Length: 64
Image 1 (cartoon, rainbow, N blue to C red):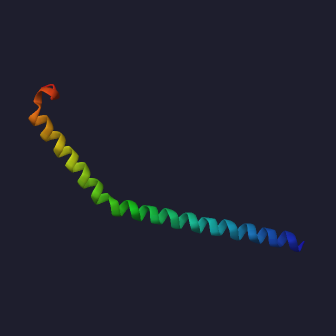
Image 2 (cartoon, rainbow, N blue to C red):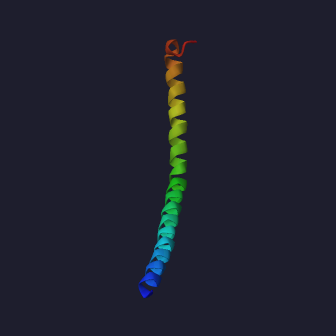
């Protein structure tokens, strides 16, 4: 009976521990995404501006 109780306690504490680890990992991942968002927006704007400039210089490729 003692073995069963210890097994159940370890199982429950293991699940709680895994929940905490997963929650911590997700929180750190979200923080990384928030930190990289301005850089990704800058790169996107830069690529759009480069595309517009390229199409202005090479309008025959734009189909207009």
